[in-house]
Length: 318
Length: 293
Image (cartoon, rainbow over all chains, first blue to last red; front, top):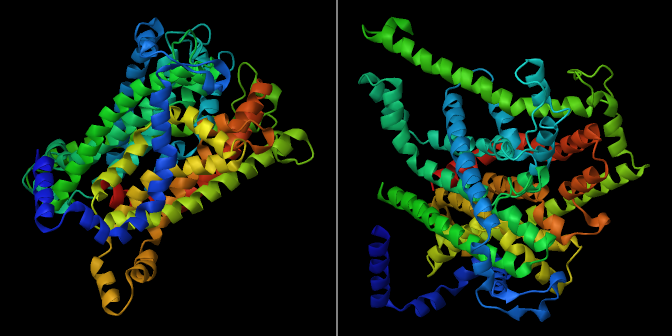
């Protein structure tokens, strides 16, 4: 609402003094500063987006001989929406994205709160907790693949030695456990990001306010819920959205660890699209998938921009 | 401390302690979750292939050996040659990406922070939205683009691509830094006769060094760890970067877990060291850029 009125106000002001083209010309030197960024973006973003949309309406021969493509309208889209795999993969993607995002956020939030107070060894502990986020997802995938190994995986062996199970469970080779097992790996890599963001956010909570609340007799929980948490709502929104998008777009962990198997149980959208394109060479269908994905991501992106500009407005008002 | 407590204090103190203990236990659990897999990686990497596959497992290797590391770092044998080449390729691509990203992001972030040209808001969000696109959307078209530009199987294709996915966050972080540098400094310089560009170069740039370092770390880590474009654009063995190279290595030696763990460890060392050395800049940049934004 606010954005609309702001916008209307500013454009009205623009019309009164000089029109947009005049302003653009007067401030043409300003564009030189952003030009390099914009040129790179245009070449590597605008063109691919246009190209993907175009390709999604064509039947394509394998081997990327794209001159031989045939226009088939929306057939690719109807083929996708009527296929069983699509719904399976979509369900996996929803579970993967929601579970990873929420659990990573909660763990990161908890770690940030626990690390907020100074204690001996805090710096070292924080550094250790951040490491999984820094190392390559490929390395992380192999480390966990070894931990989950069906014969020599350490978790399975420990479970057997404790007498909980008779023989090591197949974490990533069975349909029922593969997705949760991969989500554990994903969270391992992602909660540090939420932790860093919220640690940064916690520094913006004014100490006086917390102390004032304490003097007024607020319990630790009340102080958290009524003072700390409202201050973190902006950071939390941005963090959750960034995590959600990253999870929705994740590829490496499922691809390296299982390749989408067994029987599609760990395929999410991105791995499925990748396999369609580069495995089965069905470029048109893969492009149509990408366009659908693009629409979903843009919807998320809309909320992201709104959350960001909401923060900015709040700050301007303050 | 306890002497200032009023009659309410004993109760609330105990409750605070309860929270503090919850926090401590939580941190210990998180530490285990984080560290145990990495410790197991290290322990496995100093075992022999035979020792790694024993039941019951050797928690601590009975005969620790650095054989896996020696193999990977030995330029005499083929595994070592490959690994060192991949390592060098990764380093080259990451450094080039980082330097270019800083050169492109600094002026752009400065403009987004200071100037009010029409379309500024739109362009800024367009840049940010790039973050939201999945890599897969760009794979096929970029592959074709790279073929047209003749960049397939060159490091140029990777540098150009990494530049774009590193830029949005780089610009965003840096903009937060510039927002916090008082504009009066530049105004003073302008009054003293500096041009706008001189004020930018001589006054603002030095003040934003921490932001530039944070941006550089971010770009470097992103480029070093990238997998999907590298796997698609590069097919020649001599040009592979580490993440793809290690995957190829593993698909040929499926049971050499000590070697794989050693390779994973060595791949992680540069980015982890870099990050640990410079993390305060990074956390500060997030505080000033992303959070206060």
